Image (cartoon, rainbow over all chains, first blue to last red; front, side, top):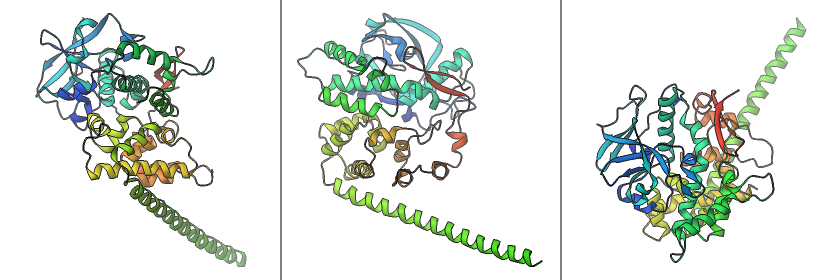
Length: 220
Length: 192
């Protein structure tokens, strides 16, 4: 597959998801992330569309989040590069095919986005593909997903590690307390002017040592 | 006239010698590759005696992400989570994890002190391919070629050519690059 001169097409719809359906219950402790698809109380399906860094202030979600509504759509076309520039395909969710509609935007309060109402979580590749289409829709700039990946890998690694820490925590501890402790741990710099552990997660040379240290520190 | 004939003889001998050295080099590279793969097989058999949980524990403490373990094993992350809780793992999956553990062991013996870091780094600057991705695509042989025995730089491009002959077009972004912005976060800009 050559670096794209056009929007990319996944090899399989399975490549798009980290989890969907019942498997999302395995990720109840995972932070909200770009591309997460929620079923609101109204029954509407919406997807978080902002970059992960724009969704949070510290350990808290911002008060209101930018989302796009999903609508029923047929099976995605074999080639995602031609047309449909106003949407991202979300096939095989709840036994149906959907699309995330970029021109059907909704601001949703964080209180409506309980993690237990998540019906799908995009894979790292799925997030990159969504961002590629979203950036193209908004600016007509085409960036390869492999380059977007270099930017999103740090936040994705952080979300993975928070999930690991919270999943492994002592059940007698409060999730929010552990999350704050871990947030402080990630922000630690071993020397002034040096990289924080959070910043090291974006560095391919250093991120494995942060993971190993987190597992030792938080007994995962 | 004599000088011309003499030059031709020397050139002919030089070309024969060059071919012999090239063939010898190819033979020795092929032997090295098969010996390293044989070593990996032996280490894999040893590692396979360990339980699935022990293998996963070794990968976790070495710094692997569970996302990469799942990609390498070609199963979902929830499946890896179930293995970590001790739920059933097929023999084929256990053998595959054993191969990864054995590979780490082999890298450490070749003086690569943080093998997971080494695997996650790009094969070459500006090339969007990690050694780990090559392992996920089952090219253990090529990653072994990237291990230097004597500290000398390895000629990476022939290895990339063998992995994907179109890598210059498929794995290099000529238009954009990432950089660390003033807030410490990574961002994207046009390549200068």
